[in-house]
Image (cartoon, rainbow, N blue to C red; front, side, top):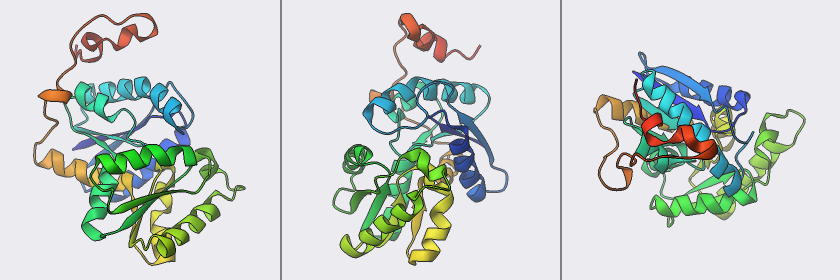
Length: 249
């Protein structure tokens, strides 16, 4: 089976981090294909970045589906463009926030998401509520820019550890969810360091994608995820008209 992992920001090194995490848990016979958006922000921190990342994300998912991907993963913890992607695609599309919360709910009654910036915390709290985990999950921000996770001279990882310590002591968290795809390579080390399960959404999404493909299940095409109505789009978004994006010619 082939699974597409799309980084909806334009930072290729972050794509490589997500791809490595995906490949490390993929089953024998699962091919991971990673793609980086070619348009939009270098990182996604807040509503503005998220909105402008969606067109590039949709383009990569459309290209990946046409190339043979059987499921797609959105490698951003904001689940950027998830609803739009599910409406557009004929393959299952998984957001790493939803995947991480679902997996963690199997192994812990209370858990905490530790994310990057304070401006990202509020959108993630909304996702936690949407996914039915409000009574079980807290969200904390380490107040670190996403791109600082890749800077060896920054104190980003130390600040992340400090916030995890606070989650364990103050929230009484039984497990930690890493709230950024750029943290995917830290999960195993942090689990050993703190002695609790640490869940990376990219890895969680891969296993769920494999399950959906094996079960031959895809997104329902009735109601909100129905195929978009074909109509003209104008200006810079002309090429995103449904009749163009959904064409398999």
